[in-house]
Every structure is written in C-alpha cells, then in structure tokens.
Length: 323
Image (cartoon, rainbow, N blue to C red; front, side, top):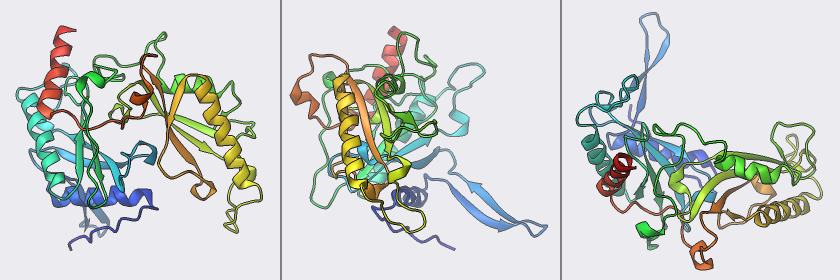
C-alpha cells in the first residue's frame, strides 16, 4: 500500500516535517517503517533504510530560525552509510568516507531541489567534526526568490562550536550559548519551565540550537521559549483565554526583550508577532562576536546557503590539520 502524501498545514509544526520525510522516502534517501505480522500473529514494523547512500531524516525547526518569507522550513540530517561511518573506538574514518560525504551531500541537495525546495547544506558539516551532515530545507512562495548567502568573510566564526569530535564540551571560561542567556534571564526574574515557585513573568526554556541557523555575525546563539504564567494560560476545559492574557503577553515579552537587550544580546523572531493564540513564544537569542559589527550587519539574513559543499568540507578539513 502506497502511503498518501501528507497535507502541509502551517498551523501544525509537525506537518512540514511529515511532508519532507515523505518526499525523502519517495526520493529513495529517507527511512520508512513497513508494517507486518509476525509468525505468532503480533504486529511488527520493519525499519527500512536505503543501501549505500546513507539515510536522511527531517526535523521540526522553530519558526524563529526560518529564512524570512519561507512558508515551510525544516532541518534535514544525513547519516552516512554504515560501512563509511567513523570508527568510534579508533577515532578514525574509513577510506572513502570524505568522498562519500561530499558526493551524498551534493546529491541530497539536488534531489530535494528537484521537488522545489531551497536547500542550504550546513557550512559546518564535516566527518572530522560530526557524525551527520545537516541541511536547512525550506520552501518559498511562488515567485519569491530565496535569500542570498553571505561571503565567507562575513561569518564571525571559522570553526564548528562544541560539542564535536575535536572539542566535546564548552570550557569553564567559555560558556555555552544557553548559559550565556540563562545568566541574564535568571537575575531578571525568569525561571525555567519546571522550576518552583513560578515567576509571575512566566517561564522560559533555553536550549542549544544547531549552528547551521546561527546569524553569521553571532559567536553564541540559543533557542529561547517563553510560556505565560499558569494564571494566563488557555483553559484546558473551555479552550478560552482568561481576562488579561493579552496584556500579560505584551508586558512580559517587552520585559524579556529589554532584559536581553540591556545585557548586549540580540533577539530574532518570526515575522508574525507572537500572541496568546500561540501558547508560547520562541526566539533566537544571540551575542555578537565583535562590538564593531555595524547596524547594517544586524539586518543580514541568518544562516544562508553554503558556498559549496566540497569547498566547505575541504576548508574545515584544512583548518583541522593546520589548527
């Protein structure tokens, strides 16, 4: 039985992921589960992955990290074929692994582009740093061109950030992005989602996010989610919002932005404003690598396409050998 193509609904964050995963399977580069029945009459599901080309999987991406104007956006990971994966015990790559990465990243991009997607291979993908390669995959409205990529010189960082094979964690004097943000929010009165007692300012969650979607001028970037205080959440019984919910959202988000801004951090959000109808608000919060970055640079579009798959991997490889 041939699966039906999922219908994309912008209001359902999982529907974009489901659609891209469906297309990956149709292209012969995705994973699938084939239902069946065992000899004992029990239902089973057989995991099926492509042979020799590796396997791709799509994941949900916060709308705060989408390219401006995109109507659908996900991240896609590619895992190399089992025979060409890194030997974790020896810490070495098998012969042909680098070529496998270069060929399959380019082929994966071409395959998805053939279906009308814009594909941006991550400039940080390299078998010397990570087990998988990443892509930003998105779709623009008809007639709207994709964004332009910045020059190599416009990127603040020249190396992948931890964790990776060469550097498994952030150092004590070099805090992780989520720690940079959390050290601002906690003194300003915000608490994490599960922490008690809750703050009247609502709750926040600060998580790491793939370097692929960091703004080019950033040296730290985290994914921040804000939830309203329980007093102003939508009723699970009636589905209605309590009185004062709009004001609560407006006041708390204004204070959140102000606290982050006063600490020298910048906030990137989706084009449409967040409101009580969303349940939560999400942002990219980042720090500039240099105070000399101009206001014009802050308006640049984040995380554009790689300047070339082979060139990106080769440059990372050169820096790994000479650094």
